[in-house]
Amino acid sequence: MLEDFYLYVRGASDVIPAGYQEPGMRAYRHLVLLGATQMIEAQFPQLREQLGESAWKTLIETFVRQSAWTSHFYGDLKDEFLAFLERESQR
Amino acid sequence: MAGLGYRAEMAAWDMSAVDADFFEVAPENWIRRDRSPLYALRDAGREIKLHGVSLSLGGQAPIQPAFLYALRELITDLGTQHYSDHLAASGDAHQLYDLFPIPFTSSEVTRISDRIKQVQDILGMPMAVENTTYYTNIGEMSEVEFLMQVVEQADCQILLDINNIAVNHKNHHASDLPQFLAQVDMQRVSYMHVAGHEFDERFGLYIDTHSQPVEPSTRHVALDLHQKHAIPILLEWDHDLPGLHDINQELACLKTSIST
Image (cartoon, rainbow over all chains, first blue to last red; front, side, top):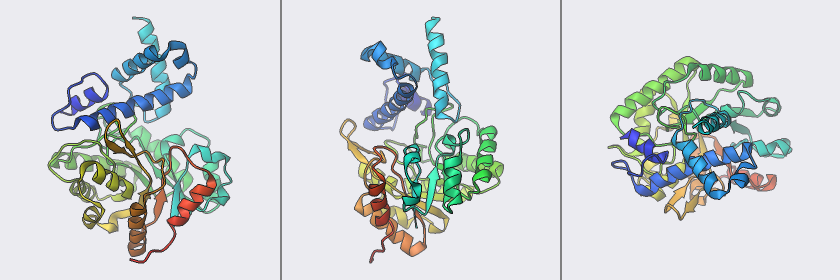
């Protein structure tokens, strides 16, 4: 059940987990994307403009979906993002 | 007695002009950073309380001792007596850097209180847990039943967030403020949080944004508890931070006495 909760939050599934409400689930997914967007925009201010809105949104969504961060420090998301870009560019 | 959540934007302010008796910071922001702004506040006689955002008491990942050792160093360095984090998860086995609900169930009471005990053992001091907002959750208990069972089993303190109780009541029509507070053991409350929130039409939910003035009903309840139990109040304002003058006005409202 908890696994389903986080699959939805990450955007890896659109199935509302049993017992939870759809508006709240959408709010959590939105808040996670917002947090990742704000951090990456602060670290890489030109990236959004360079990519264009559609590719930028897809990139953030893909980044969040595959997330496996363990650091207590939000700023370390920058390094995770760079590692993610490296992996993506090698695909 | 009124405190204020310290924000990075305040580095440009004359902090001696801020009418706060104490401050609160997220330890995650200061473990690796130059702490001189915090030393200046402390040396001016204003205590720094630590309020964490990443402990993930509700998460599935093991508690990381290395993080707690770094936290312990910060606690000692700042000479503070208070550390809290949220009664929430930051993700499943990984960090998503937000606050997600812990199911209000008996098995989670046991699991979470064991994790709190583990943290307190490593830190060598009691901690406080904050009641959080949740936008959807499951479980057979009410939120306040869950909170009280956790803090009693873990023998920890409560950072009582009055705004979060009000937001949850608006969103889920659960316990209102008087009903919730009637079930809280005030002896366990270290201090209170007040803040503002906003309605978000996209979700049809009130979101705990900390971007608005405190609602009069929330302020009134906090002042009442302050008068009856001498529990300090702290103002959180994290987004769309107004100027020093407006913050002082809001703080002044938290220091007035009320007739009940």
